[in-house]
Image 1: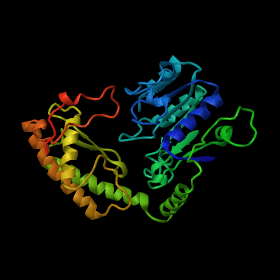
Image 2 (image 1 turned 30 degrees about the vertical axis):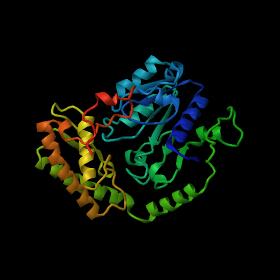
Image 3 (image 1 turned 120 degrees about the vertical axis):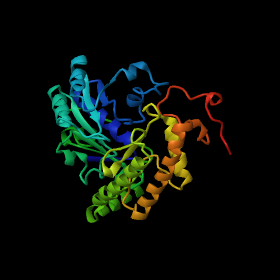
Image 4 (image 1 turned 90 degrees about the vertical axis):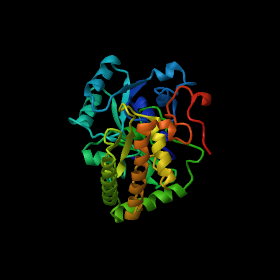
Amino acid sequence: MVKFCKDGSDATSGALRLARAYTGRDMVACCADHPFFSTDDWFIGTTKMSAGIPASVSALTATFRYNDIASVKALFEDYPGRIAAIIMEPARADEPQDNFLHEAMRIAHENGALFILDEMITGFRWHMRGAQKLYGIVPDLSCFGKALGNGFAISALAGKAEYMRLGGLHHTDFPRVFLLSTTHGTETHAMAAAIATMAIYRDEPVIERLYEQGAKLAAGINEAIAGHRLQDHVRLSGRPCCLTYSTLDGNGMPSQAFRTLFLQETIRRGVLMPSLVVSYTHSDVDIARTIDAVHGALGIYVRALNDGVESCLVGRPSQVVYRRFNEDPASSCPPPRL
């Protein structure tokens, strides 16, 4: 069964309401290594931006680590009979190791909890039928979005009828769950966009091209990194269809200042690349232009490692999203240069 909605938060929060209603339990658990599940309190309360969220609400969400099955087992030992569901992305930059997804689902089921996959990113990108098809696993509930509507505001909560029917219109032995009903939930142009998008996925080699163009991009960027001898400072990771990169300082530590510099210099060369997620429309010319921009930016990166990153920045370094406080502009460096 499927219920359509407007964004990822609608879908993931709806999935957890179903799990809580079905199990009669109050706690949920999400993967601490995956950066975003929802704008709702159950998730934001686990981040550094928990201001405004009661501690009693935050206490109802536990966390575990990806590819760490011991941390999943510990959840159910620490909170026996309380966890309604565990939710995670199937994968990000790292692949599941040692049958992690299947083992996590087995442990959840053995302890009476549901297993939920957030496929907002992986769905229709890792595989036409989602990463769950690629990894050979069938979760209890799944959440899709992003590629589903090619930029239009649509997402979907899908799952086994045993659980989904609690939010439906037919009689069940369970109290009805207020699943998904929003102000703009009934607008239909996003649904039309999703239907058209799925037809293109069905009829054209979208997934194959994502992998093909992503592989070209990765090869070119890695060659540029090696050419500048920056392997210890700029790194690519992830599947070709959904690449990510990290920027490290002279001590090999993640650096927002160097990330800001890298973005500054690629933008200067006409390419905005906060991520490296290829699309079906990215041509060989686009890939080559991106690689050229990266090559130029890396030359400045080398200079910044030698002379100090502050000397190369036009404005202040960007800040991480999840932060307790904003920086005091007076203490940030350097001042903007016009």
